[in-house]
Length: 417
Image 1 (cartoon, rainbow, N blue to C red):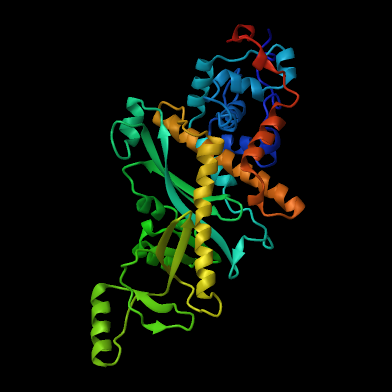
Image 2 (cartoon, rainbow, N blue to C red):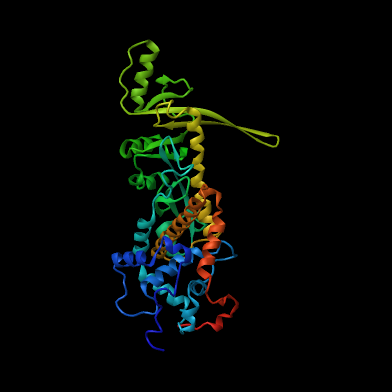
């Protein structure tokens, strides 16, 4: 076999419909930027390996009992013509070595190129009070429980479980597109990781978050980014009611405890109000009553927001907006359950390949969200009305259409390197 026929040519591996967002030219650009372009002819050039790494995420097993093997994924990605031309199906060991040669940098650069909001300026459900609705939350991803992964990432909770990595993502509520994401060893808290996300928050965003993140981080983000925020806070959080508004909410300020104490003393004794340095906020309290059969659950919820004008943002509308924070939970369900597969762990056994796999998973998820959003825009519906599971299955079909169906062949029928 000639060296020409032993090399995977451009176009003989494909990401199908995802190439509208992950085109070969973009992959080549990040490969060049990362400096990992092969210096000699290889069976597996860098772009082929990038497609393979992304393909591992597309076919990572959400519809099966376990993630498919390396060689099976490569079969699905490869055109029939490639096999007719006599291409070798690489061994799992060769594919693993190719992943190591590629490294994490190209996938990190690719994620940085494709991340970002996807909703159009006139998209229904994407905007409120003239601002783009976004939310963030944290989650954990289970890793292969190797000594290297445990040493690098650690465990959350008991040391007897899987090694885990902590992930915090800022997502667009209407499309679930990832605006930015950070991950690290589980010893780093969600609050610490959120500090690294602050640069992705912009004026014109309305950021939603749960009470786990605290009002000090709220003040930092509100002061430094220009974004507006609606966060849940603990019911016993100390916010003096400086002015009661007509809709039942009230104005307050995030400030040091000594200033709050001085203000309350002056108010109690009828003295002139002392200055209250800090960040002005508005507090919205409301109650949610849930009926499940004969069980009634009552939840008192307190929100803090930078939206100070009740004429622009009435208290009821603020409360309704906060509940879109669940879109961040829904996006994690899509990422971890629908795409990765419920109960599955990341397959990589070394920290560098874990990083590579997570970036590939984020890139793949972003491309799927983009595909779903584009389809929704075509027919004028909310992207959330389109099943994410169906989006994955249709994408897989566009990749495997026209490929030789090797799934029915015994592995001994495949040539190995």
